[in-house]
Image (tube, rainbow, N blue to C red; front, top):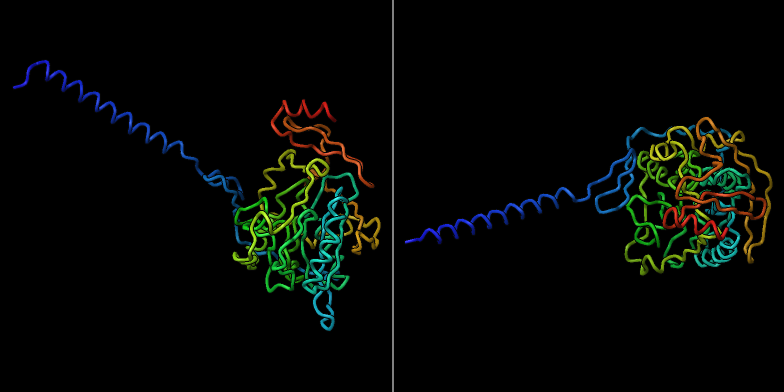
Length: 358
């Protein structure tokens, strides 16, 4: 027999239990809703785990119709020749280490090569894609039948990194080896390609002024051209900490990554207009060309002045003022005297603090 008090106690306990169950279900449901989801922009996905992913919007093929500049016959008797293309500005410290290092590295692999330093001397924002296109034209006219798109601040340390003639594009600085970038579609740093494959994808886009994104767009070109991207094997014996030496000096070589106007939107789209075939004398001029000894290594220096189409890429020129979170950084080296918008490390206070030391 139950007393009235025991019934009331049981009823209260049941209510408490029900409330606990409701609260538990609510918490679980809330946590599920709060789980990070994929952030989708045109051409780019930031996955829920924070990983960067490049998305190819369509498979419309690239049509490359070569003009007389690309009617080249290579010397098969002497064998393959590698053209190392180095897009360059304000990086003499890095180049002084890069050139002699590559001489010794490639000597051990018995690679016939020539280093082309494509030096942008105008006051426009840096355009890595266009510089590599210019370097490619110089290289094939110097007898190179394959090229390495090579950052000046990335030195290969593992002799198993093969710089030989590849059957398809070989991404040396693979995501599992590069010290900084590890997303699956990353193809920057060092990419080796046959000349015919570079032409097949129409080189690189000329739309990217400032730092970054041109290699992600190049990835899309390789995919739609159905070119397999090779990478060094997983068991190469080294990893992200000791396959390369990264010698970038962030204070001396400030990365110009501020987006101007609708640049961010345009940067995420596949460029079906510009590339190698549109890299003509209307878009750049060669100011000087010379052989230069850098630490015992002879390199071909090509000083170029780029031309900007303000109608199609109005973000090619440095804006007069920097956006919030950025500060002007004056840079003077050689013929270059200009500035970039440097991103402040921790926001507006950091900008104010850094401005005191300018």
